Image (cartoon, rainbow, N blue to C red; front, side, top):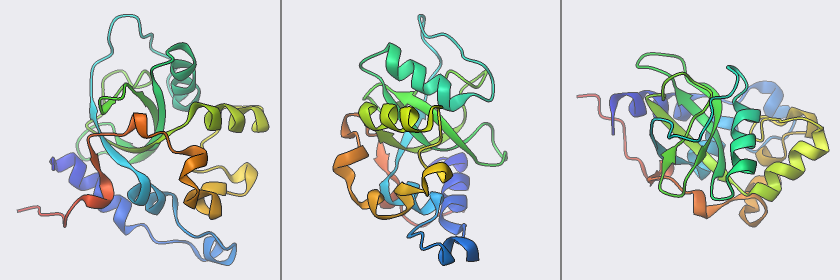
Length: 176
């Protein structure tokens, strides 16, 4: 595990649910969901034919790549832009080979941990909200993935888009 991946995994494992989330009956935090269901993705440079989208528009940029490239799978999770940066909720696509294809950041990030989603689920969520929304932080619809829907993998999980290794299989962080 790389140092940036260790930093990201430490962040994901150590975020505690807020009192409001517990009171609202949410079964998990965004970070817990990513650790339970997510994969590591390897950063790659953009290839020819993939256009960079507007900055700070990762959700719509990734969704547009998914729509334009029928072999690309939408992923959402957390990423680090550079060593020592703050982990951010982020979206990208993958090619089915475990690559994070990120057309939002000027250069690839140093660590990507996320969940691959079925295109139908992504599209239906966007249509229901009339916008490109975060599937993990879908407050508009009561956080469905943080409730019972998160346990119904057949509705949203796209295994064709799996990454290089499951997050939940990562061992303890060893910074030695």
